[in-house]
Each structure stands twice: as C-alpha cells, then as structure tokens.
Image (cartoon, rainbow, N blue to C red):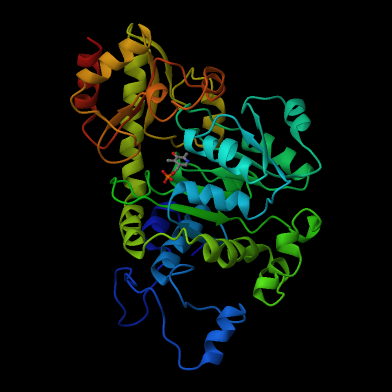
Length: 425
Ligand SMILES: *Cc1c(COP(=O)(O)O)cnc(C)c1O
C-alpha cells in the first residue's frame, strides 16, 4: 500500500473490503457498540484491546477515512475531528499544558490565530509568533525552556506565504520538540510535509478534501517519527503513566507510530467530544476520491487568474506562490513543484472601498466565508474573518486592507477571467 502513488491512495487507501463486504465505505450510524461480556468491554476501557464502544471517542467510518488521509500524507496514524479548529486545538493541547509555550508562525489562518492568541492563552499556554520569513537567529531566540512545539501552515490562509519546512523543522528538532504543520491549502496531492522533516500534520478537511462545501471537518496525522521518549521530561503526558487509563504510558505501549494519536483519542476526544459525524466522514471520503483530479483544475484556474492579475493595471499586487516572480516562488517550487492551491489574493487599486466595489460586480465568484470548493468564491478578510485583529496584527498576518482572497473553483478558466475582468472595469 505504501508504494502507491498519491492518485491511487486518494481512491483506494483506508477501506479495503473483504469478500462480500460493501464496496463503498459503510456509514456506521451508531452511537454505541454491543459486547457479549463486561470483561470484553473492560479491555477497551483499559486500552488493552482496540475496538469501539462509544462514538464520542471513535467510530469505524471515521477511522477508515482517517486511515486514507494518513496514507496520503505518508503517516503512521490519523484521526478525524469535528473541524479544522478542533484539529489544531487537539494537536497543540495533546502536548502542551498550562505553563507551557508554543512558537507559531504569525502567518496563519485568522481562526487559528484567535484560538492560540486568545483562547489558549486563557488556558495558560503562551505563544510567541514569528514571521515565516524570520532568520534562523530570530527563530532560535523565540525558544524557551518550556517550549513544546513549533507550528505553521504550509501555505498560509489567506496570506499565501509558504513556510520553509527545513528551517523550522531543524530548529524544532534542535530543541527536542515537534514541528506541527497545517497542510490544508496544498493538500497531500501537492505537498507532503513529512518528506521535509515535519512531525505532525493537521487539516481543515472542510476545504479541498471535502471539496464541495458539504461538511465541516478536520484531521490530524502523525509521521510516527518523533521520539517522545528521547525528550521524556518535556512530554510527561506521553511518557509517564496516565491514571485515567489504569497507568498506561502511551509512548511505551503504542510506540512512536501510535502514541500521539492514541492519547489524543483516549483523552481529548473522550473529554471534549469533538468528533466528526460518520455521515460527514462519508462525504469527506467521496471528496478524497476525486481530490487529485480536482486539484489540477483548481491550480490551473488559479494560475491563469494570477497571470491575468499580474498584467492588470487595476491590481496593486498579486500573491500566488506558483507564479514566477512571487516572493515564495522558490520555496514553493522546492516543496510543491506540481502546484500549490486554487487561492490567489490580490490588492485592488483604490484601497478598501475599491475592493468592496469590485466584489459587488462579480457574477461567478460569490462572496463567502469559505475557500476551496467546486464553486468559485471570494472574501475581503479585513472586513470579515480578520476584523477582530488590530492593524498591527493584520500586517503581521500579511493581510492588507485592500486584499481580496479569490478561491478558484472548478469552472471554465476563461469564464472566471472574464468575470474578474468585467468586475475590475
Ligand atoms: C479553514 C481553515 C482552518 C479551520 O478549519 P475549520 O474546518 O473551518 O474549523 C484551519 N486552518 C486553515 C489553513 C484553514 O483554511
């Protein structure tokens, strides 16, 4: 299975039906599971046997789809969550407690920034935000003795900065902590961060993976390569006994390949219940089956739009990592040479008001708080997703007041360009 190319994994990985079983992933629409004896069930509660007992923690449909995403990323274990927000929260909270510290790229999704900077700070976890373009020295200076992870987005939403995986992974590993990357925008079809030193990957599956604007969801995948025991003092939650599971030690019992996801399932899913519904996991799997085909068209449309805008006197600037001349072109070519994503951002000449006027005139691109589905859409971050941020925070996220984020769907390329040309006037 590991030797398959990504296209085959999109279609075939995860669910492999045995003789006479359903061809399509079954939806286990059941909150609970039946056992013959209490002794059988007790083994599950002690993590002595694997199996299902309650869908707040685990469901077979979800696990089949998570296994597909893990295979696509080249990881050893995966889990689905109710949203991308839940995935990023779990990925950090699984290894950081009150009093701990995280280093994050400042160029990240507005919702994640708020989660870290406001909500998780209230839980006593400190964050230092560094520019994705920081020097090695600047990155080094951000580490503290209580730093537990480094976080970034492969392609940031909406700034479209591309992170230098090797720079961040090298620094994280020198300090004995994992590098966690949100790989939502390129998807594993275009970029596989584990090949460049990343340890844990998160996704908002709500975006390209689902691809049809049908189901909110998230995923976490573990590379299985971070050695928790080698840094046992930093990660007591993984390397010392868990009293809520009869004293098992995750890193010992489940090894490097399984400890992180097992702990996140057994503790965080049990206590927070941020599970994806099996019905949504089913929709997600339908999306995954065509992800490799769809990404090509999203990227072709985005490239054509970026080229058009680059030559348009109405555009002040254009951001698209795969466009020659883009600030992130070289790093994008290194880590995602086949393509980046379907999202292009640009500044409308004339400022905030001109941006809003342009958006009113669009007929195909609809105004939505969304990206990355079959239908083209657009958003003005400064007046929507990023409106809680101060001007300095906006600048740190790489979001100008006149920036419009254009998500190219699967429509005809010329129709999309004509729509934008007409609206720019
Ligand atoms: C949308 C998004 C999220 C949040 O995901 P939800 O599924 O909306 O909770 C996280 N990271 C990135 C990069 C996103 O684009």
